[in-house]
Length: 319
Image (cartoon, rainbow, N blue to C red; front, top):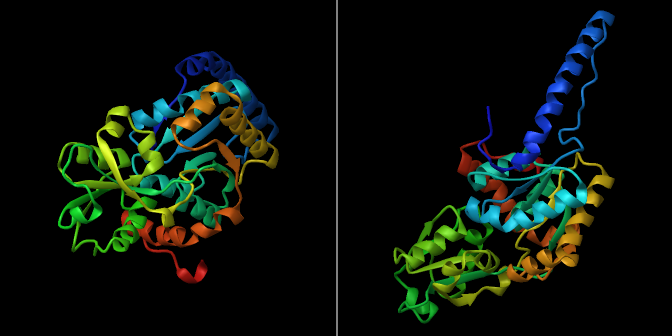
């Protein structure tokens, strides 16, 4: 069955490889005949992510069109630096994305904090990089709206991103710290992305939204200009995203990818500008040990994914 990922490929690269693939098909057919005559079985390449191309899967925290635009400079740079095709993919929603990580479908992922911990702990993904600056949950209201203080939101409706987003979990603690009983003193509504939550503030359908401050910085200018930040929650500070590599990749391959990503973020005009625009402050190396404080959110995600997908929950005794 064809995956429903939104794949941003390079059409010219695809055209350029058609002729080569046709010639390769004839060669494979000839080899198969020769092997059949000799009574041998051809060797199977067990590497699910062969050298010669790289796929980077971005968490669906923003609309696909925004992700395409945001990551195009990185994709173009990596193609030149690695001298191979680079494809950016995402998934239609968080549950699908997390399930594909669990199946190790993606060679490289750029995922959110709690998912990064879970990918490393349960699926063996290798942490590579994270933003130098951490992200925080941020409460926003309409710039020209009447809400001036957090207390003014009592009885109002607050928008959140997908229920599996780490910000959605953090929002509960943030609201309780401000004296609200979530679901009783305020009504919570979930939307597919951070952008969708903010857009409902702009349309007046909800009074406020709680989103990642770094996600807010990656939204179109009209979205950022249309809202006002009431407060941020420092206890929720965490990496906005984490870059991780599939454990099937060799150590040398992972180091090659890490080096190319670092070079883009720290040595190119486009990369430095993006890091500044997104509030990342650059990229720095990270490790499983550094992700350890995210374990509570990661364990929460582990239990919530089956509920979101309808699958049986994992046996806690095996974790």
